Length: 628
Image (cartoon, rainbow, N blue to C red):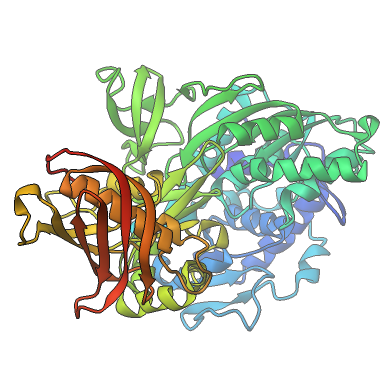
């Protein structure tokens, strides 16, 4: 058993070398022992003998059935493509050659082109669950010596799923490293709050406890809440000596933690005598904020270890979070992992490229996570951001360019750019939008809220709701650098700066007149920004520049264009003939005298939209010509 010549032999025999009576799987419906699992897997192995296809597409929402299928396919040396429901339509693009589907989640209504597939397996879930075939340990040893791989689908640069192959050696080495690094034993129950169809959830929430001989709690869509209830009610290990828990989480758990704590207090469901103490929480799948760390500490009351990696690389580094800390520690490489260029680049920024037993590519080459890092020591670094346009939001990987491309297809959008944003609490996306003529008309007639909703609805047909842009900024143009490219810095500035308080000046000039020597007359051509601060709430469905703001602008531009300083004391002859809306191009005419400022806003056809006279109490001359 100690030999590791065959990768899946090591994994399979490590799992099934434990006592068959060991409880390995728990959900709301009951318990499964290792003997139950082995018998069920053996039954499926026998069924697989009737199929010649090497490639198998596995889609199964039930964690237990998923494991049965995965282990059986590994034993038979088949290639396993793990797909979620949103990736089913991409199967023909990522699987070469013939393939079969497997999983009770498939139904005749599943929107998948199966014309190139072999046939369906596992149509009757009950027959698999109740299988009582001989343990596969009694099958001929040759059944363990064919090779295959497990393939995960992750977002590429275009947003289409990209296949990432892992051989069983890599999965096993990563699990063994994890167990050794944190001295994990078979004395804890594992609660996985991450889907088993994700490489992190599968490896650390399911295969790791099986490898250790520990029970684990099956992930469901209700995720963290169900697991938290189970921890509190001690429902899993009443008949087991296990009294500790390990939680495999994602940043989403941190965001839900505060609400769950409130629910526990509201319903008084916490009884310390029935709570399984959580000894450790592991978190991966996205960047943690300080607030999320504190919330998870409050919810689970244990140490928190954050794991860094990617589907391509697997786990690369880690850092520990402590309840009283407000700063993050540097990332530390896991044992056996090496960082390309670390020795010669301490203090510099470099791409994160690493290699090691489970990290290297098929030919031993270093693999990149797509992150830029600042090397602080040979084995330590800080994250500086992404090198590509792939981002993880709420633990879900998304291509920013894909979001932009989908938005570009909407008739309201002329140009757009999606940029990642973050606060101390969370990460999210922002969208800078240049509206088309129909889009601008929608903004004017229905308002920003309705337009935002329309664009999010357009995106929700393709993207997960948690990854949709949180904010939209409607702008006249998106700034580009000298190479004609939009920079992340300019896009971010549109969100980090205040909402604009003044119009966009197209041109300004001094008018011919009797008093040119005192620069007393001027005109400005201006465009009203779509996201002007003063349009917020004024009014819902019909954004209008407030009259008071038009007065303020007249006074302001008299100061910066005519170069005078004045204290308006009263207003007369005030008229508002036509509303001014976002996107309007108007001309502001100014005339200054010792006693007053006359102003008028007009359209290109000369129609006056607003006018009036501001009287001031004093004049303190300043003939400098200012800039707006």
